[in-house]
Length: 175
Ligand SMILES: O=C(O)CCC(=O)C(=O)O
Image (cartoon, rainbow, N blue to C red; front, side):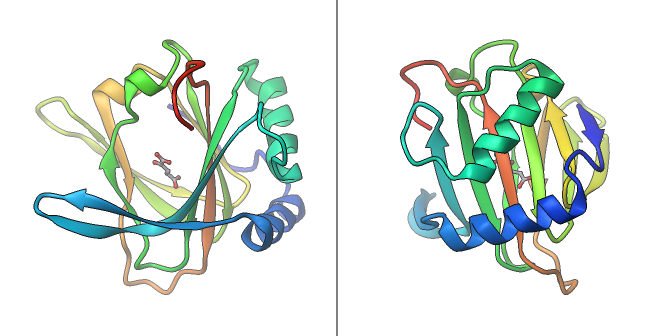
């Protein structure tokens, strides 16, 4: 995994945050967990770049990522953490939904949130990383097998955050 704290200049990151917050059709999802249906604790959205109507900030961010990483990302998943109650549980991305050997690029906008990255190997070493607005975290495909990542809830007062997760999906995979 590699981290660039100021990949997007602050004013542009703030502008993208406002535009995406106000224009994306955010979805509140529910999903089965054991014997219950629970709310997904954040809002989500997703786009394939062969769809029409992809918001301009997502297209521009993809151009910058392509220049920087030389990766042909074709999909982006968005997460909107409204406050410290919103979170994503520790997980690795589902490998059958990714083209092998291509990384995942996470761009952060809005308030900084802390990511926990934990090795799956026996000592389960942990790294905590504050994902600053405008930052880029690139996770290799292989790291999805060896590590889990998540954004825990926090009692600290935190503002809203949007993350953009760029991926190369196989042609028939969902977003
Ligand atoms: O919000 C983040 O930075 C993490 C998002 C994430 O783990 C995911 O979309 O799978």
